[in-house]
Length: 264
Image 1 (cartoon, rainbow, N blue to C red):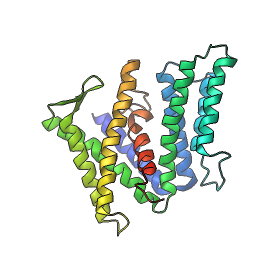
Image 2 (cartoon, rainbow, N blue to C red):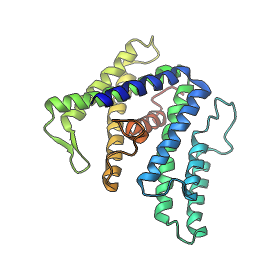
Image 3 (cartoon, rainbow, N blue to C red):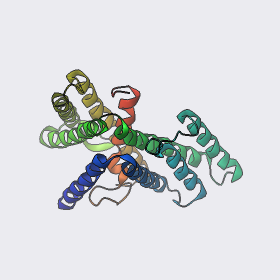
Image 4 (cartoon, helix red, strand yellow):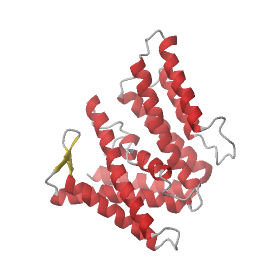
């Protein structure tokens, strides 16, 4: 528990410091996190992290999370076109390798690129918005408040299992506690936002952080249970890997943007 606490404090200070720094250094930091996250995904599905198909995946991550805005350059293709091209390339791998790389492996790698790449790209892009520090901190606070509420309320009052086949320790009471805490954290941001965020929108964002974030956590738990692992990595002692810590982030950030809950 002590190691977990120390790691969490150090990692939290480092990440929040990078958010405050912003610009190209922050985006490159997020790109590095995305590379590590995809590396963990590749290892999780049992593929060599140095294989040719994995390297195509790293290239895909780079294309999706590349710091276009800080460098003031335009992507060569729209996002949908990029994803289609990557899809075709992964399908062609099965042909060129004469099925040594199976369609199942190609499909999983493409899934990993979309899952990791899109998620981290929105984490990076949120910081480049007007008032980007505020919006990034708001979403992180909502996610972390949900995690804390779910943990402490679940410990104190949890009796009804939420989804025992996937994550046996999570409870309905804990999940509801996470929702309340995330909503409260978002409302606090609204109160001190100087009119930047209304209480109504804050409640919707807080609810999104809690519900979608907890679903993202369950997705990662399901994958780990399928592959028989406890953590996706060991980069963060007591916490696991990047995907273990960011499983909620990489679904919440895209979700709130796609539903236009943050200003364009």
